[in-house]
Amino acid sequence: MSTIQETVETIKCIAASEFIMPVMLRGRHGIGKTQVFKQLAEETGRKYFAVYGAQLTEGDLLGIPSTVKFKNFEGETKEATNFCLPLWLLKAANEPSVIVFEEIDRAEPTVRKAFMQLACERELWDVKLHPQTVIGAAINGGPTGQHYDVLDMDPAEQDRWAIFELTPTTEEWVQWAKDQDYPPEFIAFVNAERKHLEHKSEFDPNVVYPSRRSWARFLQIIKTGGLYDTYTKKRDNKENYSEEMKRIYFLSRSMLGEACAINLKKHLESLKVYEPLDIIKLGAKMHKEVEDQGRLVDLVTNLINEDHYSDKLSSLKTKEMNNLAAFVFGGSGEIAQQISKLISRKFTKLNTSLLMKWLETKYNGRKVSEYTAELSTAAVDFDTDYDKDDNSKEEEE
Image (cartoon, rainbow, N blue to C red):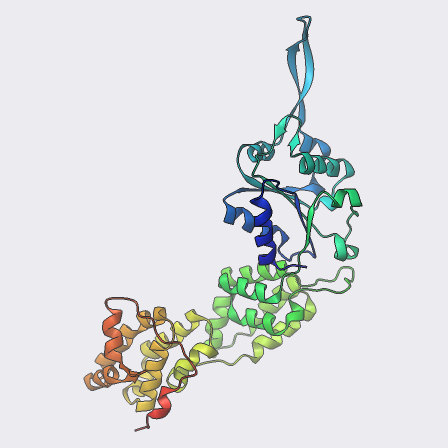
């Protein structure tokens, strides 16, 4: 059993050796078997080719026959059969590549034999693979094979492969989803309700179950289809977003299954809704409460730009001013760069004395004026220790 990163690093060792043994990944559907080979190709500078065994006939792999003329030892011209090999094979013979045979345990026996010949001998007909080309296979067979309509592999077949049972962790998927900048509310649900990331027990016929792959596709649609933006905008503005919730529910039910969709809906409905004024109440703690940086920028931008907050900003107490400084300079430098000038302009417009009070406000022993001066020339490495509460030392006016 191995995680995705462990598997990638181990296969790199095989790929760097003098004898590049064929590599087979076994495991449940949608867990990232193909992604392992794509990552290998990307990190080692190899070309990537995927060949789907269940879609092939023997001729698709061994080549299409054509006739050629040749002279025999008596000088007579004869015709013979030659084979035009697939382009991916010729490319993999010409430069370092990663060839992945997908679903070879669903392929016809004749196709599997051709795969085995290429995997073992690293050549078909008179075409030899490049010495640094890696041959891989991704299948659903093995320990989880009873859930799938696949063919068993006999011991002689298995003996020709380095076989890895891929068992990625939830932590790997969560980090991957964060790297893709997928909506944090949905990632938090998966992290908290891990049984809904993928179905591991018996499969009932015609029932939709979640998988890592279906989650990735679902989140891609949510993120890029405009639904998430509309949902968060209405939610944060305390508008009615029931229609958006319905669409999220129907979409999740169609891709992740009913049980997962019901629990996801409950999770989203239970989330706390933050207002712009929460920034001056919570300060740097907002960065812990709200992980989405874009949402934080929207909240503080609304606080500054919306006219109905002007009266509150004009009468900020010392602790509230401290909280505002802690929010701006206690998070990422990116947020500070975006909003510190906006705040200064807003305070200048409201009251010059308010601007002076803002510039004299301290966070971690440094004045706001010092932070803003450095921002104008270079990026600042701001303190992100959210547990440190400097505001407790200040008294309210």
